Length: 517
Image 1 (cartoon, rainbow, N blue to C red):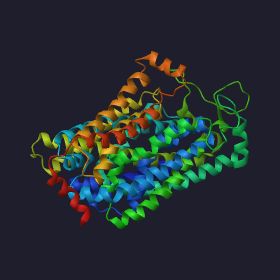
Image 2 (cartoon, rainbow, N blue to C red):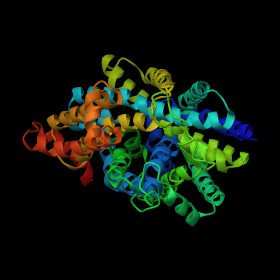
Image 3 (cartoon, rainbow, N blue to C red):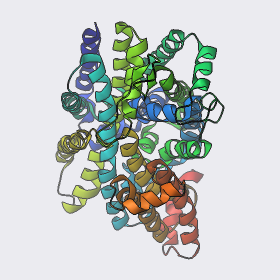
Image 4 (cartoon, helix red, strand yellow):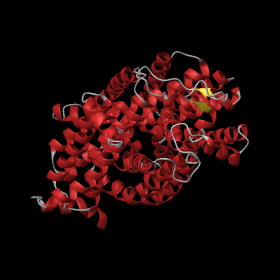
């Protein structure tokens, strides 16, 4: 039954890709859908690109385990900050200025807004490099569930998903992803509600679950996993910032505003996207908060809960928590629904990531090298080739099972949003933002992420890790590093802009005249 559901779903995705193939023959059609995408499709595309197996399996499992019910605040932050405020602050101005400047990608926006080809090239390189670990994290989460549902080897799952994504995106471009995202979003909304009801019912209802969580004392004080702000509110806040504010600077997210049809569509999309995030993100983290009720890290505690093993590096396998929880409480038909749910969420995110990366490389790196000699058909073909290249590199990284989903995503979001969020947002609103400030933000966002990765994630300086642990500082968390990178950019850009100047005021006035029309 599960396999039949899955086959029907895959055939539907490929069918949509084939049916929209004719709309993806031009650059504008392939990456922007002709800038004519409505509110419902754009809102669902935003939401389904935002939430994938990374959230449902990786983040929900790890932070539900660490913070219990308070992990639900992450989903609320995603809805309010990551969706509602992102649409209200960025939506209209992004659509208006990118259309006025004829910018199709974020690097192209930076080039035309700040009149610098060097900034465009730097942005394109950053996007290509740091979207790869995010894509790998999506494969990782997706493969965990497929291994659980079908008992298929982890590496086989990853390779199969890569091939399916390649076919799906290469055929239809943005038009195919937008239509598929809408269908996938409906599946996600219904699926997450059904799974939560099953999980609560299996353990006696909501009040019973709260009681059971309060009694758990393994590594946390009693009655904290069922409390409002959990056992570690400071680090919980860091997760909220990374996963919520991060969407403001991620190229695959703000790209949705480039393609939306009108300002009225933005108003409707704001409401739709926010409701979607409340249900999907809030539901995912709430489900993750049930992790310790179903699972244990102690094989001798006699509770009957599923034992979660440790990885080869000695750390708890957080990414196995949600799959184990689902296997414990769901019947086979619901397992099939969950697999399709997570496949839906992940395929939409993957399609958005590979489309963003391939368009960036083609338009912002390869096109300038050819001095305009490539025609539109060749550029679209080049994008399709780079989709395959990007997927191949991501698969190689994802095959490393010792890399946590949350770590991979945090590195990606920290570098990208740390570099781009501040100059992009300020650049939409203020003429005072300078090229020097943009460069400073790029250096800060990437620098903080990379330095932290070498010191902590890769373990090149074990003394620093020991020192941080002895001081009881969670400096080793890539999530906190990502949040710091974003906040640093928001501070650095106005400071640097205040003592540097823009030389071409006339060009700036032209860029901003679009808002007065």
